[in-house]
Length: 165
Image 1 (tube, rainbow, N blue to C red):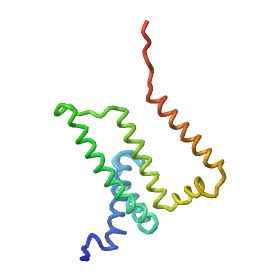
Image 2 (spheres, one colour):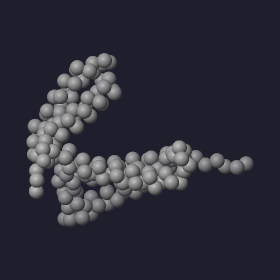
Image 3 (cartoon, rainbow, N blue to C red):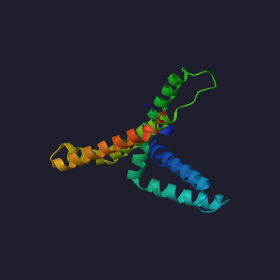
Image 4 (tube, one colour):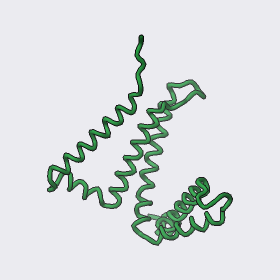
C-alpha cells in the first residue's frame, strides 16, 4: 500500500485534529464574543492553546479521528434523505418540517453519544451493567428513563388541539 502525506501518522493524528479543533474553537469564540468584540488575536491564542492541548493527549485525538467517519457517513445519509425528500416539492419550495428537524437532531445526538461511548470504551461497560451481571435495578431504571423520554417526546410533539364549539 502506498502511503501518501495525508495518511501519514503525523498528519492524521496531529495536524488534522489540531486544525479542526483550532478552527472550531476560534469560530465559537468569534461567534459568541465571550472574550470581547473584535478580539481576534485573543481568540486565536486561546484556540491555538486549546488545539495544542488536544493534540498532546492521544486519547482525545483518537476520539476525534474516530468521530469524523461517523460525521461523514451521517452527512451522506442526510444528503441522500434530503435529495429523495426534495422530489416531493416544487423546485425552490423545499422546506423541512419542524418535527423532521427535531427527529434528525435527536437521531444525530443519539449517534454522537453512542459514538463517543463506543470510542471511549464506555459502551462495553454500560452493556455489561445493563445486560450482564448487574442487578435488574439498573435495567429497570434504564427502561423507566426511556419510557419517560418517549412520553415527553409524544406529549411535546402533540401540541395543542383546537376544540370545535
